[in-house]
Amino acid sequence: MILIISRWTYTTTIILVTILIVIAFGIIHLGMSNIGDFNNSIQYSQGSFYYDKKFVPIMDNISNVVPHNDTIVMSFNSTSLLDYFIQSELEIPYGAYSLQSLQEYMMKKDRRWLLVYENVSHTKSLLPLFRKEGLKDLDSAFQKISEYSTEDHSRFHLYKLK
Image (cartoon, one colour):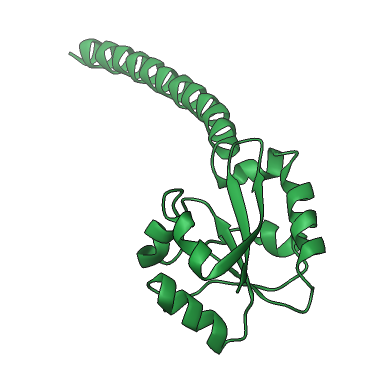
């Protein structure tokens, strides 16, 4: 009886060790493939600006157009990259919910510049205004100064309050 139990324990131990080795290799393989997926996803997310050769020249151009002591109201800023490359201070128009309220927000705070990251907005209610189709509505209150397109086809629009 003891011989049967010891064989069973030995066989069970071999099986368990084999299973653990297979699981460990699977986890390592999965982890390695996820690193590649992670690197690819960074390039196609907002982190793609890190790899975009047009991004820095665009931000430099905006800095050359907007006086450094003027604050720029921006539709979206989730990365410190914009703060680093644009010499002016950036501000999200929290509380604005329409073209008229955006205009009032900017006039009240003495802001003249608006930078729109097309199709993106921190302020959910302003998203229709900052979509490609809604940008034409800005023409009534803003003068379009320039439009920029990055390698990944992100678009930035610089406006000045009329």
